[in-house]
Length: 233
Image (cartoon, rainbow, N blue to C red; front, side):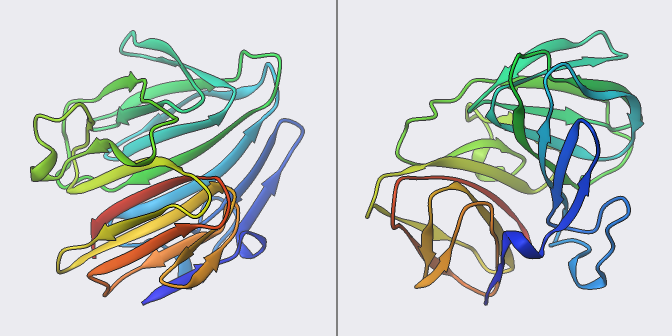
């Protein structure tokens, strides 16, 4: 089954520095039909104004992945971690037994990102943070972060969950195949451009929930950047 969730139907929040869309129930947005997708609990599409951001706040028992689409984000936490993650790169935070962090846009232009929360396989892990640069112009999908057994030893950042975050680009008319094992599902969002998934068209920042499919064919109808989360169904 392929369920298209147009960008215009997503939850929305806006204040003087944050313009956000929510693929799943979050904050004041609540939709019983969009609570989660397997272990994928949150997918927020955030635009953060220059010089603004999320002040220090706590998390616990969650794997939080941040994919930067435009600009950069600067991370600080109570473990002493600090770093800047820029467009095309990814950071992973293991909330585990508890972490307090802040995320600021210290750039002169708006930062646009996806923040993705994945429920861990086990609670009470050691908290931590890491960031890594990946080749944004590589065609096809690259595994950026994973806790899947088949990705052990790969360059991907580690997740404490049987899930994977993939991203990459497709040239116009290029096709890639996403294969899903039994009892696996995927949630796909085009950053820009448009694609067809087994013939169904998805536009920029639409959500596409894929389940009960062993293989899907993704074709770019124009140059496209994609982010995909694969989870247990």
